[in-house]
Image (cartoon, rainbow, N blue to C red; front, top):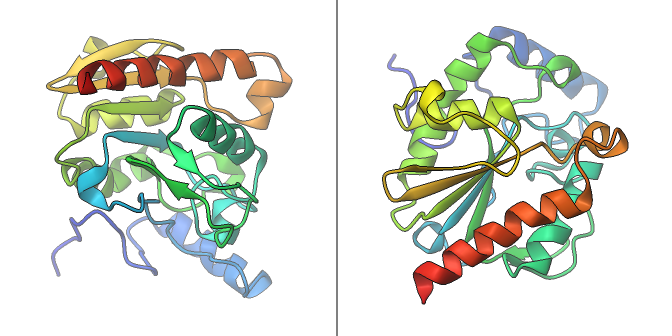
Length: 221
């Protein structure tokens, strides 16, 4: 059987044995959780409206793996969605649950790895395997103009999804790099660890999205 190549893995994707088995164990422990690959969160306007894509690392165990929506249910989502709201990329009140009514505006959110990994650490083969979904996810957005990559792994996997060498588009917080007509903005991941240690401040994170907003408004103007 041919390997799936669409933008979303099947709910019981078994391409990565370790991740499949990890999720299967959590289905037994927490049958009410999502416990499956987490699909891309799309805006109300659908695929054609997407100008900005946010790429994270992977679902958190008690975050997106529990709720079924990227960055929903853990601290990283609080900072991300508050920032998206501030810059007009979403509307509504984020309440850390998928039925909170929050809507994205011309923005989509996905992860480089769609399944929750043990200890939040996917291995190289899992990252490579899941690029078969990241690549078509990016390709489906015909009007995409900007991507925010959260952390080194998300950044490198995104660059590789474009078929480009990582060395030509290195990761750095606040860095920008153009691939075709898409500009990639890189940021440290908005994890509790990064914010608690001071590696990433709220101001640093909002600064990246401020640059994105200015860039997109410049194109629109």
